[in-house]
Image (cartoon, rainbow, N blue to C red; front, side, top):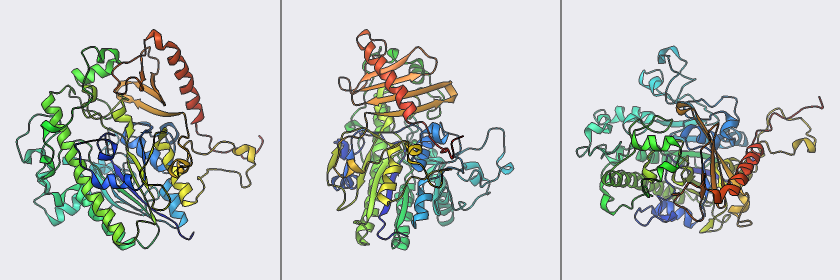
Length: 519
């Protein structure tokens, strides 16, 4: 084992709108503890996901590959057991690897047409049906390099796993309080929004904080990889008291509302259908997302409360690091797997709608005495850059598959994963590393395949075999109100961006396995 290995503590939230933190400019939401990470470290202003859905994005965070590289191209696809993962590589270096909360590398459901009892629970350890039938009462370990696990599956009123077992064992009468029928006040009708009756001390975010602190107190004397993954603020939007009333709806800033009736008509047809009629996608319900201003304010106020409770528990964990004198030896990262539309342009939740609120995420790094304080990076980065950055900090090479025992340099001209180490940006050595980032999205329910490229100024989205598309000038129109796809004035810009997208797709293709001989 290498000496002086830094620890890694990752705070991961689920479906987190990039503007919903104090350090990202929100004037209402109080996130003092997350803001402290930014004040003591480096905040990325333009960090993008490579897929706006949970499973593909989390698989990228674990493997460093694009969705088409690890094959989890949408929700409901299992990450292959053959994939090399970040915790697996760090475990071989001597790290103690542990996860608390949500993982989501294998589905919450089971294969269509099957019953749970006909399946091997070890193949579907994150499945709700497998846990509810009693086929699992403890998560099988290890799991994609995670040596031990405190597991939560699901969200809100449909959580399960170790958290639910703990709750029923210690407080058997309380689990029914998770349901919307037990809401502290009558339901308003706002989509998936209520005031949870579960006490704060029994809430999933508190449980994640408790288990994370327990791990640190027990195992903090060893180099650790600690995945602290909060299922919130993913819908349903149901914080407990006092957080459900912490932010008054009338004081909540509204999202980028529809500018006028014509705005959605400039977008691809599924935007309009989702807003007006409802649409089944991998990330949305079938209900229309068109809501009144009062409904939007309620959802956003509850969403703020969920983030506030997360921030409180992050503060408890950071205090534990300080108390144990682990702060200086620990790389702390705050990130989200993807964003949340949260009413932007009349839409909610997630799906094939590549607005900034969904595809841009908070991304904050702290490492005392190594990264500068209060640094803001405006250069483009993506979650593809997460794995190579961690590996460089840990002093590890990127894992290879079927590499020649004595590689010839000319054969190794391409990196085995497409991301770039962010260490030059984190250290202050550079301000930019790449001119564009790529977002992939296959929406099987709708038969859509989207590819988006984001540059310093523009964002372009193309759809397979469709005449329509999206083009936004983020400099002139940061709220993305005017789709310029059909604008004659932007015809050359569109053509240039299509070429850049093509080159980015080729650049990020997987070069593995390596050739082992001439022929």
